[in-house]
Image (cartoon, rainbow, N blue to C red; front, side):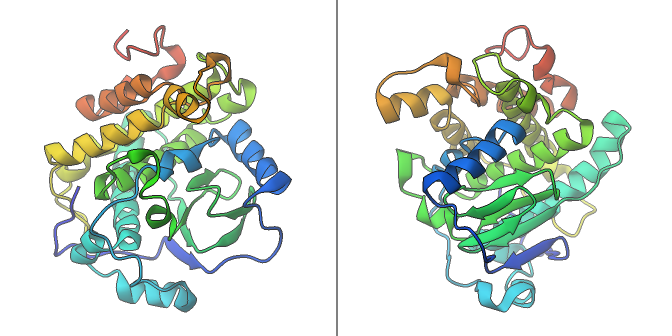
Length: 305
């Protein structure tokens, strides 16, 4: 959703890194090991594929330069107009909105005080608490350091992949999903991916579907905030459609069918396209975290069951 133009962006919980030294993991066993760590243990396997489909149109990816670090980020990302025209500033504004929402909502809904994660907007490669990462990994959340990592060139690089429509709202959904993993980390639910890493009813699938639902809860309520410095306009029908388009493209069944022409539900880690859409919409339609209990769901195809 678009930001109100007079919103004031806050970069204090965002850092700009130009890349860490060490092992590059864009391919080969290094990348496979990192994806195993991030995927099997932290519910992020395939998040690079998820985000390959969410590149938007109408964005400038050249205005924010990583070499000037946080100072440059603060200069370039000041208000809602910047967030509406620049994908990096969109991530800053979205993080501001997510933090404001969860800081108020989480303790009311669960009794757990919200701890703000850091957002790391890196370029090329970076060092994380979960290992070295490159843009090949895609946006992900690392519970070891409680940081959401996003390569600032990623959306542009992947905007034409898999035929998704993309756009500002689809990119916001990606970050809201990662913050959903942070909520799971605070509530102690993220570990279900480690206990039960794959299969159509696995803990990994339930973790990912719940993160989608949490993203929907935020999307339902984000435009209700009239107090924070960053405020959002209501979602348009087109913006919701673009998110649903993204959830449909990144289902395990669609990805497997596209890549190899067959599907194997015993290897699912994120859920089907229909499930991902259904759980996002469950959160979006209800605005209620209690509608996101995938771990007790009897039918992952039907969140209401």
